[in-house]
Image (cartoon, rainbow, N blue to C red; front, top):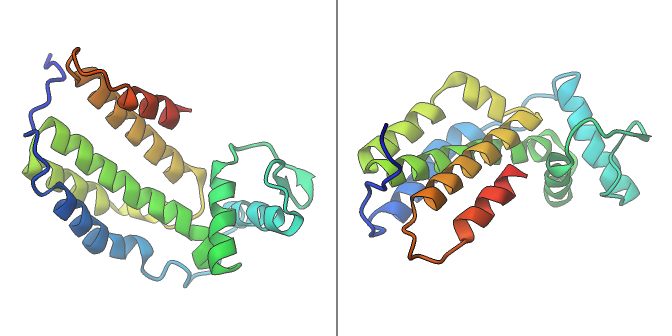
Length: 184
């Protein structure tokens, strides 16, 4: 079994350039025509109505669906959707934006993990494979809690890999804190 030794160079040569390239080129399929279709029943309507009611009642602590308490799912997606709806209005684009951005962030996290463990070529191929997987792209374009969960799990895994592979003399606990944050 391979240990978690980091194989990439310590320099940041090309990381920022690659991540910007991924966001620009691969962000198009995630964001293009995001609001062109109506919400799909029943899940998208449900997950769009809850943040709409949060904004209407100005209560972000107690989620409601048809003004009845709704505690079936964690509230992070509702909060992100409410913020998006506040910024972009009550429409399909605003309702789907947090899921699409979570999908794009998952592609970026995949790039970072692969770059950390292997090299630039493997990282770009990994990000490209994920970003061109039809099921992944489709799931990121609808309002479901799954894409936000996928991002959090991927980011937690990446944080754990960084934390576990750090040298003992390095005293930074940030990777562990990020691991706990994304795992919560």
